[in-house]
Image (cartoon, rainbow over all chains, first blue to last red; front, side, top):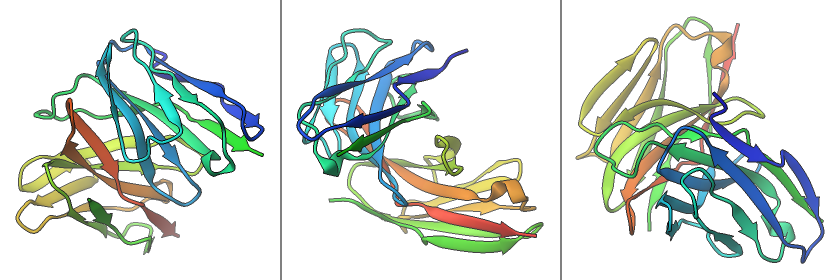
Length: 116
Length: 112
């Protein structure tokens, strides 16, 4: 099983450029989310989605857009890259949006993004 | 707002037991999770507590006290491969569902 696939694995951008980070899962999970992790820090929630057509903001949504047109894909768009967005970006998925049961988040391998 | 606090670093000896604490101040709390992350890797799920008490999974146990807004992860029979960062995370009520908010992590160093 592929699980959660993120592309690209590495990317260097110039300030002001735009870019889309791709995330796809093949587990038929309804719930997907994006996190960023700065060096030596925890993960901060950017956006999340409980299903196609539904997205919500997390802790640090500014400068990022998401859409969820299919269950499988949850791309993250940087509108105008800034050096402060240099980070490792993780996409995660879980079975559905209910919280009454134990639902582990399955993480992708991350995208390492540098903005010059 | 919400906050989670956990120690930044813990050192222990191989074969020993170590406890990593997590305290939180949040609203709309559903449960507490623990994740492990090795350097350069992705986080992986360890445990989840929705109710007060102890959950055991092999060498790892996790505890939650909702009244104290406190939980911990207990690692027994430590192995070198347990050297990693450990994150507590709270499931909170979100606009459409729940959202998972992570602490800043505890770096565990296991020495021979």
